Figure 1 (cartoon, helix red, strand yellow):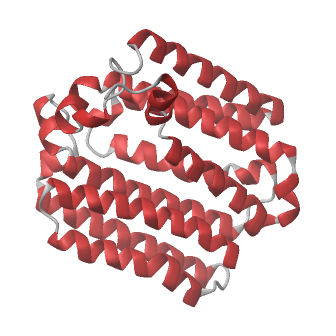
Figure 2: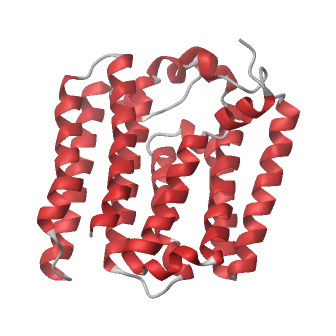
Length: 279
């Protein structure tokens, strides 16, 4: 069935993921810093600029990955079907320019961060994602930064903001590696050097276990050496889901398993964001 233009653009820009990014920034500002910020027009502008940069990243990623996606996810391909390649590039440029411009209007530092993120997203789509780990790390870093950047608008930097930024970083890094496990066939066909291709499934899984353990140790280090944290709360909302990912990953060995696990990581991310409201 042919998609309508609006439907094509919503699918191309991963509208659901964009909503999660916007909610993450609003929850960070309202529940980790001060609820007074929820009605601040500057927060709306910052969330809008971040969403634009992220949407541009999704567009350019799909632009470069059409051939690979026709193997890995043929039913989700939009460019060349619902949106032409020329209009996809134009849409990417417009979103990038608007996102950076709004960031500059808010604060030159936010403008610099937005420009850097836009450049890294283009570089990721063009080259980094075909390299082992570097591409995964880049996406995870940008996800964590989307939460941390709220403190540039509302300083000073808070410990809880740092912890949730780290949470976003680690869970995104794990999800990106799991997606590489899911997309192993298409990536191998087009010469991508992802971790599952160069290490194999078993070593890649072990690395994911290491990442989950590292996140837990970092939070514990902050709790014991920097400032006391509500560990029972974090145990329920952050640590327990991490253990669930590890348990599921041990048994996963098919494309469907890894797809479901990557979606579960997205649910964990959303639950982590919502947990801010209960702190």
